Length: 543
Ligand code: ADP
Image 1 (cartoon, helix red, strand yellow):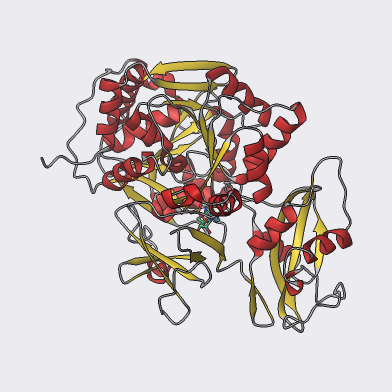
Image 2: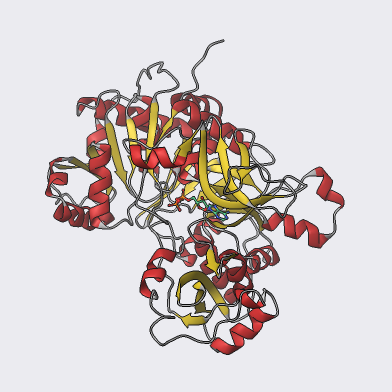
């Protein structure tokens, strides 16, 4: 039958077939619970309220919030009525917040009460933003212009809504890239791409999510739809646990233990903090069977520590432009018989490709590169959940979308087992004396040192070698190591000319709004470190 793939059909399925599974949400100091049946009624009330406020098909509605049940209600109500939900990154600068909302032409902005100050700052940066209507979720701070309270807005609405039979290619959600290497660029996900991505991501060799799972998305709902979890969970009938604003390790541990969370997902930086807290108390989280880590490479030391605590680590790679999941490092039949070392090595790679992603690797001259685990090149992808362009950004689109493919900007290898590994982002590769250094490999070697908590390696200008690597490190609490000691440690693990010329010690590495290391900020801060007399004698790259 020709039945469109719609966000509303995921909701209808959960309401009808999994009415007793549902959503648990930390709402300030309280924990609130809704079965999918009760949740569905709230989604309908919200859609009726949006219609009363004049929202028409195609209109953009923004969310500015933590992971919460109300945010999830927006995920379903807005697309299902034919409008587009723009999930604004709450950690962007005020100018960027105002800029992305203007680019999307959002008519209404739903704001968490605790985030009203950030929106006020964005209005300060661009007073035109003050023309929007604001709906306040949670603590009712109604000090923004035209502000109304979410619960009062939906209270008297009908719990029924006749969801329209939309064309499945209608836009459902707009999300901007994380701005790690460039300004944020907007992507539109359709109902069809969202549905297909959810189906593909639920699969056993991908996230392997099932009805019995209790899922805690730590990855924010403004970071590529929390990697699809808000759609995958209702689709399989798994329950969702929303952490609200409390993302500190104690807050997460409390929720995992109280709700019996089996599955979680987030960027490496989230897990560093949780690992340290679990190690400090000397006990893992027995219910937490597995965690997906992605957004940047999983450091081997983090992988080993979490597995030692009893939680399986699933390494995933993706991009905003890909909805986002592209690969997940699940072992294949062939690897069942491999040695533990080989299995660990493969699981640390980004992994085999999802069914909805076709790929090729090209060198700088556009020639295909062998999938032999050694030859590297840029990864190009295409598929039904890969974007075809950036929204209203012709210049960026022309550079990234070529001949029906999307250029990822990631430099990768693919091995004999079909496992992809990211060597580096093309913008982060350090080119010393004409030869490439993989910043990821040097970072992983540094993070293997017992005193190092986080390491970030980036290139700066060098008089002789054009560019040389610098490492910024954050030490684990109560530990110390000198610059020389770390360089000696690296000398035993990476090529001599890959050893950073300098190691700088920081209290924190600057991060993007989604928690990735912000290398471009470090490159700017230390741009002149090697040219302003702070130079040390660099190794000859050819040695
Ligand atoms: P941005 O491009 O601004 O960082 P995204 O969040 O879409 O925004 O990031 C996608 C990029 O993140 C990928 O192209 C890749 O470079 C990096 N990335 C994502 N997951 C991983 C991973 N598991 N390992 C290494 N890099 C990753």
